[in-house]
Amino acid sequence: MNTMELAGNWGEQKEKLKQKFAALTENDLFFSDGKKEEMIEKLKVKLGITKEELLKIIEKL
Image (cartoon, rainbow, N blue to C red; front, side):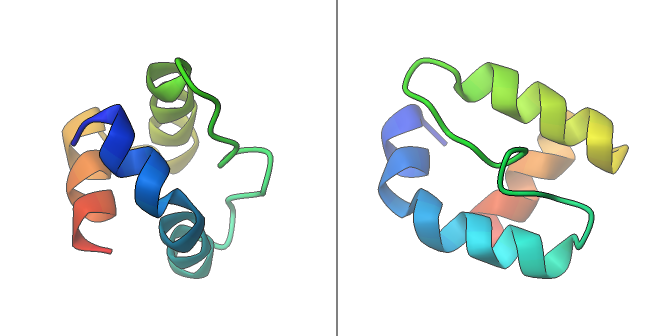
């Protein structure tokens, strides 16, 4: 998954992530150009999963 894929579908994907993981907030899912890795790190720590697991979840949304 590259930044363009994440940015292109992010509005829809983040809503699905919030439904799947009630603990996630809008602030957790804020996507800023060039900050994809920071956001992924924050999400994986909050959810207690690996980066690979998180990316697989996002890809399946």
